[in-house]
Length: 202
Length: 220
Image 1 (cartoon, rainbow over the protein chains, first blue to last red):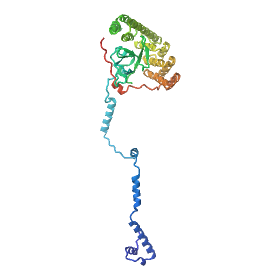
Image 2: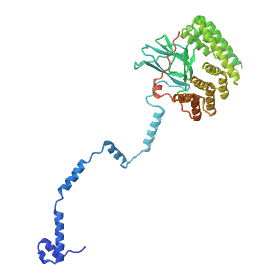
Image 3: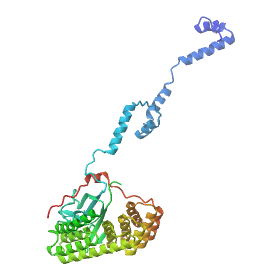
Image 4: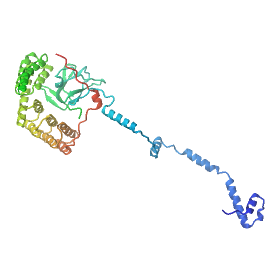
């Protein structure tokens, strides 16, 4: 670091008249006085204001963009696991998979399946499905029209196999299932529908 | 041998008794002796009796007259005999199993020609054949040519598809028809897919939860 000439100090402190200095020292003193004046001057007010206003006027990013930015920003996550808890968690997941909660309805055997019967009978008071699965006995499987829209449904557990059936509407009208793709002559001048019940556990 | 003979002697009267008991009150009284006689004849010939009883019960439920019930049961007995003959011609050793006779009788009732049934029997020399027969019958119900339908199902069997999945083959062909393909195109497309035809959906959990067993039959 160069030492400053003591006469410069004296000139800056006003102890020595600038005229008493050499031309070179006078220039140095002039430069230092200019620099001090610059440093002492307040910051330009207009510049600060414009920067603040620019920051205020900047549009707020949308929630989606903020979420995206938050998701895209790398973060360090510390995850401490006790092995005993992770094993317990795995056991709970396995149990829920094997024995799901909220499972109601009958237990279905290996040689059983589910048959769904649906028919549109607006204005009907009752609809039953009758077939070789219930010895053609009316009344054992009633369809329901829960939402009163004329569409009657029943979901039934049956042994696997093929069965012939018909709907009995209001206890007297025999109607084939028009939605069934399989039909066969019943030898009485009408057609029975056929349902093939496949094992539920496949 | 003695045990089997004893069981057979016991089973004869039991079969007769159970048929009458099941028909009583459900079938017009005038039809019961004739139906029972046909059931006994079927039993004596080693044919399944349940389809005959079911036909009589169906007639009774539909309030059909006694002569028509007897006639329908007679037709059913004839179909069972035809089915048995096809099975024996197809290579099954007599006595053929009642389940297989019923399966083939179904196929004939659903409109499969005898020679087509025989082709399926040759392709599937061992039971169960119900799925294969129904798969071909499903194709015929969708107006596929019986021989072409049988070709497809036999090809699926040849590709190692388990019998249970054969119904998925006929369902796939029906889907292709719905998509606007011709019968020939549908068969060709499904044949290309074999053996990876889509499986039919399993019952949903909500369907299982809704399902119930039929109420126990009330005594007549």
